[in-house]
Structure formats: structure tokens, C-alpha cells
Image (tube, rainbow, N blue to C red):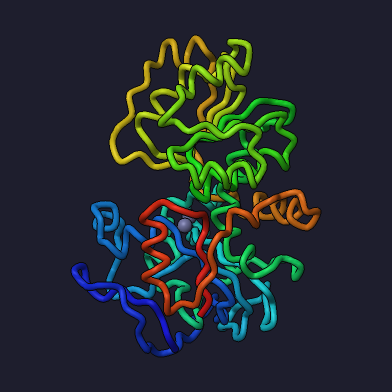
Length: 343
Ligand SMILES: [Zn+2]
Ligand SMILES: [Zn+2]
């Protein structure tokens, strides 16, 4: 089968002919319908310091966001069967550690990641542990089903801050931020204010439902949000930029008693003045590492089935796997939204 392979640290990613994988006990073989490109893939392709520290063993078939059809099941698989339409959950739990036994398997103490610690989905076929092959409604189109993993991260963040009737600021309008805007609207946010530094992404933010899209290059985000909220500040912030400056600036306009969900990964430590910014404010800070398994998935699917999540505008490109280089370039330039690759 054809697959996108990173062979060595120094090598360019290439489309290779590799053997079709066989499902081991507890695994399923999925024929990939669509996969989506993520920032993590770019880190692996370029072998950045993050990739060097991520415990990746090369060669690796890349890609972790996908959907497809189960074509074969390995021994000991019971919950799913051939023909099932599934999306991949990237987080592979061990099932035995403290977190796994206490309802927190998405942050398993021995967590492994699909497409990072084992071969992924930029290929015609992929094997995945059965627990991570999540059955999805047949009404969800493949391009949307391929992004349920990142969409679920945004949905989770929004469900944590519970923004119904509130003003939410979404910082960063890459795919995760765009999905957070859509999720905030779907869950009844009264007003969603998005911020980014790229005009194209701000347009997409409006397309997925942002009431106000702020270009942080030209306006002072803190001033605008304070002015828009009568000096009170945002009730909730979803941080999806990973920008140290954006995070350090956000405390100024998080209201007292406000909630901040952090998704974006800053490359450097962030300074927080805990007294004024968190303690006296009684701010609630929530780290988000993926989706709850599988409460987030269930609620996300309910929202999708009822047409509540406006995510299609955030999926801006769809191309065959052969054009992977172009998809990486799009991502690196920070233009557009999610890019789908079809094998
Ligand atoms: Zn991803
Ligand atoms: Zn575990």
C-alpha cells in the first residue's frame, strides 16, 4: 500500500510503497477514507526539538487524524466489526494505570499516541487499537469525520468553560481555534470574540460564527474586550494560539471568576502573576489534553447530528495523499484551515 513515511531524522518525508499492516490482538485494520494534517505532523516532518523529545521511533508512517472503514479485526476484538465507520482517537491508553482506572484514560500514565508512537493514517490502511476506533454516525461526511479528533479537543475545552450566555474570547484561529469558535456558538455562548494575526484566518473565524474577529496586529485585544464587556472582561477564554505574548496578555481581560481553557502549546515558559491574575481573581485555569474518552465524543456527535457545529468552513482544502508536500506548505504558511488528504 502507499504510505507517507518519515525514514530518518534527516530524511524528507516520502510517499512509499510499504506492506499492508496486519491487526494484532486487540487491534483493527481500517481502510482510510480521509485524513487531516496537523501541526504535529509538521513537527515530525521537520524533526523539530519537539519531535526529537517525543519518543518517536523511525521509520514512521505519519498522520493521526482520520476516519475510515474497518475491514478486518484482530483476535480478541469484540466491540467493533468489519464494515463499521470509525474515526481515530489518537490517545492510546494502557487500561491499567491509576488514570485509566479512575476515568481519565485520555491522560493515561503510559499514554501512547497513534501516528507518533506507532504507525499512523497517511496511508491506504492503518491498524489501530480497537478502543481507539470510535464508531461514528454514517451521516458525518468523511472530511468532517477526519477532523473529529482535533474538533473534539476544541469541544472539550468549550464544554469545560461552559460558556452559555457568556462572552468567550478565542485566541488563535488555526483549526483548533476555529473549531472552538464553532463549539462555543453551538453551546450557547452569547458572544464569541476571536483573535489572530492573519486576515485569512479571521475571515474563517467569522465564517464559523465569531461575532467579532480581532486582528491582534492592529488592535489591542485587551482594550477591545474590556470595552465590549463594559470593563468587566471576558467570562471565558479558550487559548489556542500557544503564543506566550497572547497568554501573558490574556489575564488583563479575563474577568474575576472567569475561566480559561489552555490548549495551545507555548514553546517557552509563560509568566503568570498568580496573586492578581489567578488567586484574587478566583480564575479557573483548565489544561486540555485531548478528548475525554468517550464523553466528549458522544456529545460532539450529538451536536454534529443536530447540525449545531458549523465546522465545514474551517475545512478549507482537500487533496490526494500525493500532494502532501503542498498540504504541509499550506500549514507552515499558517494560511487556510484544515487540510484533508485522501489516500
Ligand atoms: Zn493533531
Ligand atoms: Zn493507563
